[in-house]
Image (tube, rainbow, N blue to C red; front, side, top):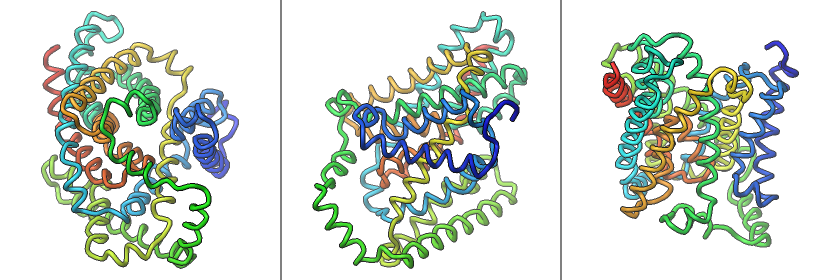
Length: 398
């Protein structure tokens, strides 16, 4: 890309890995970074580097993270998954996902009425509403489908793609901060966070735990087994997805059975549940997988140049903020009224707006691994219903 300081793939890799490591360090070192979260620090740093033309907005390094590192992390963070606890403890996720989708529809309709006479959107308001409802209930897959269905002009589609990058980055930072804010800790149930806090030990105990860990198998062999397992699961999952995709199944079933995140998660869960001792013999999974997922979040930040967005898509940014406001307010409100878990509300919001990929990354970065399967499932569910909801909302403005 012209005008960008660094274009070399290996240097870009070095920078995004360094930014991710810096975010993790900052979260532990400084109070402000602890509130923002390591994920937030990494994302904002990536945005700053892109805006200052140090990094490009597109690179082969980013593609490797999206296509390989992100799905490879899923088997690692699910090594300790317990199917009985997952079924027992994630019952509200599906309900809250539907609430989040309802918030997206309400927000999309509100945007339609606010901007239907705006010269920028002109005749594309119905298609734009459909696109936004689709993307806010299932991700960019639905956005493309709605743009084609309503014949949205290329200018609006391009601006929506650019504007959504900045909003998505800001959204991920905010949703990463929420678990660290006193207001939410005080007013919501958060059993997963409580469990993690209870597991924290003092420095002296950490030394003892590390020594015990080495005795239990923290070895090069254990690392080799982990990598072989993760690559094996991802490879088999890819074969399954390719085969299912070639069958010409109806759209709903194709979305389910050819989704790499869902297939990888289910296959890992089956293996871990069937062969628990084998799963226990592998070490480092949670730590390495969490780092990979944080790396994915950092790369998400490289898709947004603040200057470019201000120049091209300011109205798009306002519209998306309105929709996200409705999604978050309604979902968190329902969770508060019915005393549902904060963690489940957050993954439902994340699955709705970002799809299963960002939901997986979010859950992994927060170490709520028992919510990984629910996050993937409701994210895929968003794919399925997103187009239908987008069409319904868009038709209001035809």
